[in-house]
Amino acid sequence: MAERAAMKLVPKPWGRVDLGPWIQNKARAAIGEIWYERPHADAPASLLLKLLFTTQALSIQVHPDDAFAQSLGLPRGKTEAWYILSADAHAQVGVGLTRPVSAAELRAAIEDGSIEKLVNWLPVKAGDVISVPAGTIHAIGAGVVLAEVQQASDATFRLFDYGRGRELHIDLAMAMLNPTATPRGLEPEQKRLCDARRPLLSCPYFTLEILRLPPFSRTQLQARPETWILALEGDASFQGVETVTGEAVFLEHETTEIATGAHGLKALVAYASPHVAVDLLDGVRSSAAQGGFSPPLKTGEAISGAWVLTTETHA
Ligand SMILES: [Zn+2]
Image (cartoon, rainbow, N blue to C red; front, top):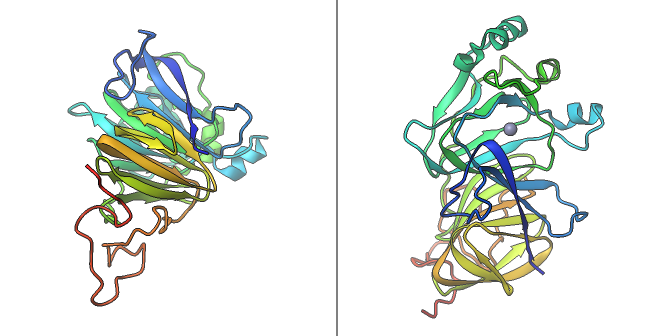
């Protein structure tokens, strides 16, 4: 049975009041993060899904990997990835450093604030995908709305906070990070698996995809490992669980019928697998012969020009 995710609105000084078109903010307070959680507090989840809304730059930080987190008595590390939903002109995110630096040089740069200039800043726009493996120095700039998928962990070591006075964790961060790592860029755009599915990224802990279903369609979705689906545009019923833009559902080891409404559905899908699940949508045939995600079509096999083959459109 699909579970509608509970939504926790987290006020942050760097957040914003207007969360449209994704969320209606009745609180009128500046909200920085929306956390999507399983409705029963003790239900296990290895992934955490969030929306972030920024009006100021967030701290420059790093997260531990599993081994380092466990050496501190924490359950797991934190690898994360971002999908940009909207970005102001000149908005940017920082991932890695622009050049290799020694630990002493990095400490000096934190001390005098010049670390801000060492960060590898990337201009972003809606639709961009950024991978942030544990141990990577990173920051999110102002004017960004993004969906974050991460290992369920709150282990964060802050390196620099623009003098805002919050606690820093420089020694822990220095023990974890690799200051000579090559900077990362935006993830390359992946080929569509079929009209309904575009993989975004796979890492050892999760895979992200964008799902697009046409209006008034019915599609079977097979969730094997833990699967989170966040409605970005439109609305749908997941086996009777009505889900509108800004809401999310949790699925695990189940097949669910997705019935879309008049606007169809665009959704971010995250599942706890390091590989693209070729059979996520039951019976979908691939039109991406060179994509590397699914077997090539046999000679003479037709490629559907319209959506997925299992989708019945009765508009
Ligand atoms: Zn982070």
